[in-house]
Amino acid sequence: MAQKKLKSTADFVWNSLKIPLTEQAPLQGISQLLCENGYEALHDTIMAYLTLYDRTDDGVITYKDFQTITSPDFDPFANDETLSAIFASFDKHQNGKITPEDLIQAAKEVSEQVTNDEAINMVKAFDADKDGAIDLREFKTIVKSKR
Image 1 (cartoon, rainbow, N blue to C red):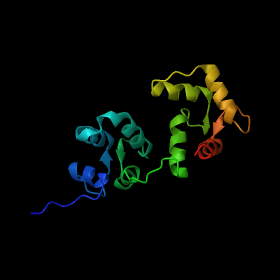
Image 2 (cartoon, rainbow, N blue to C red):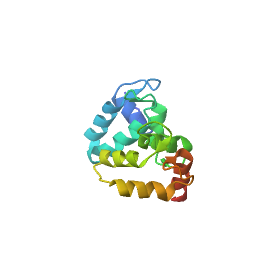
Image 3 (spheres, one colour):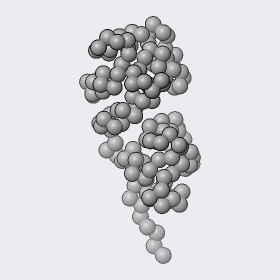
Image 4 (cartoon, one colour):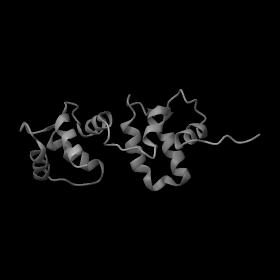
């Protein structure tokens, strides 16, 4: 019997995990499979993207979303939905604002250190409405202007 040619990374993962395309796959299973196939150096990056697309925060991702982030044309900053997900990952209090405290916490999560003064200065530099925090509109403006 001839082996079916897989079209994409997403096809490879869903086929390897024996999951129907209509079902969600566990993030840890995807990460483990990719690491076993030579992507262990990218583990943290892979998990960051998988987590951003875990829309229900329950440790799974849809085939369609996984297909999106593994596409050769994927640009995480190209659409508002992705920018909103990235913003939400910084917005630790889920109040629609990125505060200096949020920046300090986000930096700790990636093993970086940001002082309180540095965080305050970062927010001040991009805080268009001068409310002491960066809202989603300001965040999108920042990201899109840096492209």
